[in-house]
Image (cartoon, rainbow, N blue to C red; front, side):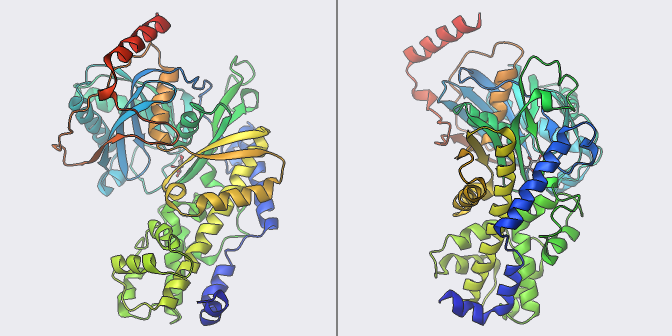
Length: 510
Ligand code: BGC
């Protein structure tokens, strides 16, 4: 069906979608406002009122590509908790074994002590399965929430985001809470050497291979970015004028942009409805416009309004869409993966939801709504990246990106590229790199960079079959991701090569 015809059939839907359009002028205004907030976040005098806080991360050292050995990594940031054992074998090979543990709503919203006991229990199970519970391996903890870092292994939670509400953790040192939970058990020895944000992990993981990677971004359930700043500009860092290290990664926490009203000129009544119904009204305004936790909800709110008007989905089964969070953001990726003019995936999505009696036109209209929300998301994310590229003043820069929206949406990368090019013109060259599992691998790499003692010699990871004794464990993956870090198959690694590696390692560390 031609687009003009669809618009004629659904004028109300098109009218709503027009409210989400962002022209170049609006985008430039947003870049300017984000840039202002970044400067305010960095400066001592204005930090407290800035919506982009630009937290110091204390990460001032970067991977050289020579990091080797075994490290543990933790990844907490969504509804799953992951424990990883990473073996840094060469500049190109990181061998990873990981296990995912589902976090129940009761734990996400219950007492903090229970959350940390759950984390400790999962780590202990994982380590016992791999017989490393007494190895005291260096551990990097990716904790993907706004944190004030007071040391590389000290982070104080500022606020929860993304559905977490665990009591008694805000304003507490989360590393201490984890250490206490581990020592309460008494059956596990690990050495927590670093706590980091997932954006930092993504940057570190990308920088392991690309020296010009200066920005890390996450577009998944939540959104955020970090970048490499001159230490002398990080006024909230006590040693900003005296530090011998010239750079520090800044965790922008750009999800909160808009909390000072900077996005009021683009926010629609649907954005406001999503905000009102969220766990943290008035907070994380930018995140609510662009990230995976909220994109599906925006589409759902539009659909409900069109259903109220009697425009769309007239079958009674469509009432299911009135249920909060019923329309998952992954549906946008699926629906937009259909070839233009086709509705095969859209049909499947409706089947999955149990909505019957939809016409082809209804589904094409649904696709138009999904595209509208994804396009605005990508345009806003492009504004954020452009503000950071301009701030770094690096003329040829790589950006490491991870997160479900960026990874799975069929057009997100292209939309980001197009809009960034539009805004940057020829002022800087940039590359957007998928930094697959940046949070996990980045945590291991950060632990490697900051480990206080030489890491254990490279050793092939156990390839034993995972036991499924833990009911909470969702999956155990032996990963071999191609982008950007390739995993190897250690079991097949020739003994001679392993021997040479050990000799080289010993030579390097002693
Ligand atoms: C958190 C950030 C995190 C981002 C992506 C946001 O909700 O505040 O710390 O980096 O989600 O996971």
